[in-house]
Length: 317
Image 1 (cartoon, rainbow, N blue to C red):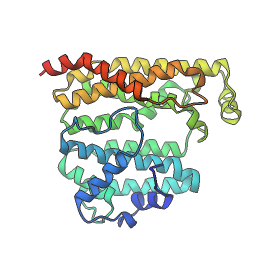
Image 2: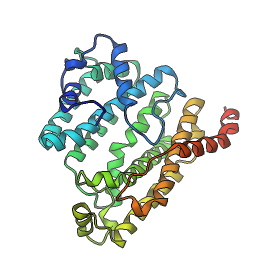
Image 3: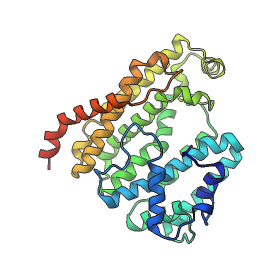
Image 4: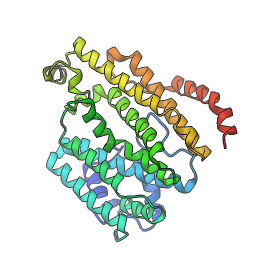
């Protein structure tokens, strides 16, 4: 959950027009609020870094704040108050998203004030936001993915919209870019699932496709008593291969981007994703017990890797 936020706070931010104790009077205050939310959560990759133009960076902060709050509702509110409460909150969020999109939101809630400002200043469609809410709703009513196709369908809603919204902010969205953006975003989502296997167990969730396992019993035994079988490990290995393959399909994406700041940001995201995936491979045997994270030495390695790309970044127009 967002640090220092209670369940009442989450309800005020997501489900009320007035915003409760977070009520604001200006757009500047609402954008600052969203920035604090977006920066409060650990990510494997940079979120709206200084590489992006200031105006676009503030829009990205709002998008991440929206996603972060909805995610916490699906994860935390449902566990504390039940699925119906979380589903109701996400439904109300959808209501306010629609109001913000058509410019009729009139309250003082910082999230909806900021999102309406983004819609007014850009040509972003509402569909990616609705797909995000659908993904979080599916988390509330979680079902194990039966197949790899099911897993990718989840990624289509939970991760791919973020890449689409970012690229649309730069006016970069076509069929070629979409394929590579979706590959990168789906890869990052699957890497996150691999990384969070130990954490998701406490939520009674397991995102490895059941078709990679012999039986549902393997998952049930892992969730119940933490039992790790050879088939379990093999299934996780297959998921790592899936993520690696998707990352490879996005290799040329940064070089299709004309804005140098965004190009570097995407390269950093790719390098960070590849680095955490490498750590997951090395620590595969303890993934069910411990969550790998990027540490100082990893960031040094990412920086050195980025130096290799610097001449190409500078020379490419």
